[in-house]
Length: 121
Image 1 (cartoon, rainbow, N blue to C red):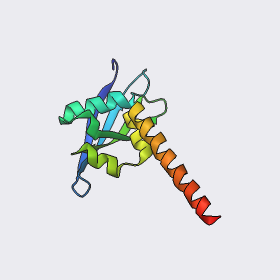
Image 2: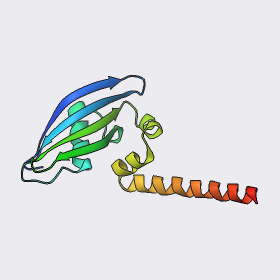
Image 3: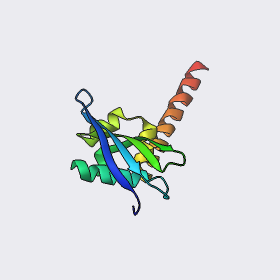
Image 4: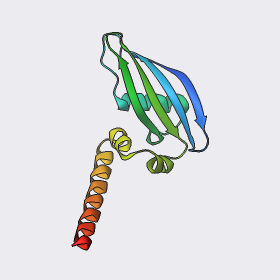
């Protein structure tokens, strides 16, 4: 994170879902878009929460400007995040653990489909 500067532009409290919705502006002139891991660690450090409760929803990069805007959800409890966030967001943010979770869910879905097919016959 040499030439990158992060700035929290907005924080919105969502009490119903027990999370904070944060907009982060990243300036990265002559550098690639920051990784989700770097962004998660920075947001967690700034807000004083555990990295496991921070989830990057979207990073939108402006072409040629060297500026990105990230949409981040910060949950009060990581268990709540696993219930609310879609599987693809969990897989993107949790790395290997997320990929295993996604594969496990896909396997369960395919097993359910097979059972339904057998019942119809």
